[in-house]
Length: 222
Image (cartoon, rainbow, N blue to C red; front, side, top):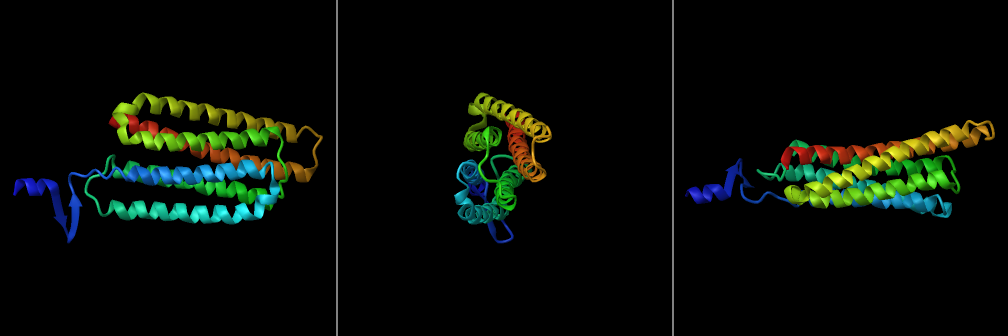
């Protein structure tokens, strides 16, 4: 009888597992990190080939909806399980923030369309590279979270990489703004690229925010 109680706990007609820690929750985080990555790659491609803009605008909207569905699925699953690998609050925080990353890359792509950006030059392309690198690293981080004790050192190293990338993104944004206001650019070009680069910098900030939350989780559980 005691053994059975240890295996399952029944509440209001719902069977809750006390043994399975439901590590598949990490897979949801990986999935939305992959959606973030897809959007970041689209941004890079659009800055070299604007002809893809209409197609990618539709695709990123679909990706955003899919990411929202993943987030809702996590919330629903939370109500069906008794034990999660890390605190529910931490899972919700990570889920919402990686979902925000997907929203942000969508905003970048919509701004490229709204402002008729055209082909980017060196600094916007490097900013796009940073977003791609960040998203790649976040995918790895979420996979490593399944075994925090074993992967603590590697997780912290990757978080530091993302911190460095975000600092570079800040510098790029400042360099672009400085260049735009040097007196050699037309007003429309200034407005266009300042808005686009600001949206990209916000996206980089959000990527770093996710990484820092992961670091806080590691400190709590390692």
